[in-house]
Amino acid sequence: MGRPSKKEERTEQVLQAFQRCVARYGLDGSTLERLAEESGLQRSLVRHFVGNRDDLVRLLAERVVSRSDAQWQELLQMLPKQQAVPVLISFLFDYDASDPELIQVVSSLCFASGQDAYLQEKMQAWTNRFIGDLATILKGDYPKASKKQRDAVAFGLASLYLNLDSLVSLALVSQYRASAKLAAESLVASLKA
Image (cartoon, rainbow, N blue to C red; front, side, top):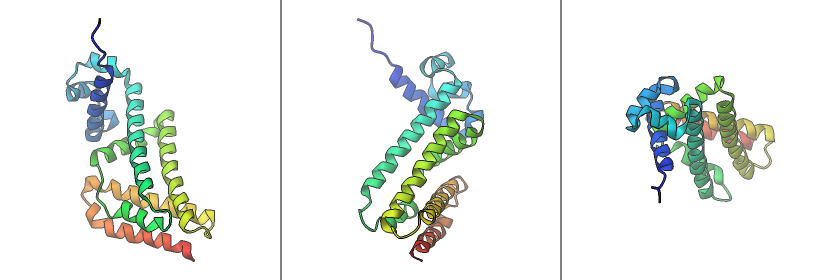
């Protein structure tokens, strides 16, 4: 009887190492040599377990989007059925749950999507789901507001949230958190008019 396959374990090891590399060096700077060093595997084994560079980038995008979606779904499950928007704004802007490594990876994937149709589709879908979910939550609390208004506010909330996250590497999140929350509340208040 042969020994059990280590493919799943090694693939996860490589993806974790690739995520750390991308956070540090960006996609272009995350060479197979750096990845091999970070993962503790030979370069040939890295390729054996994850395939070529395109395969590796796609696996990373799938991993990041899948984990992000799972966390987002958990948050959505915690929202009350009524008056969900104030709780949502608190979740988005009161807590420092930012993961600087993940933020860098998402930024790198979004930047690279301009040159990779698969990445572009994946990151567009991820962004559109987020904004669409925000619009749905807004509809629950503000059913009389027009769809156009709710969509605009959803986009504004997403923009504020993602921009606040982008300030993590600059160590400016705490400085602008209260302003981002106030801006988000102001956007939502426009739906009452």
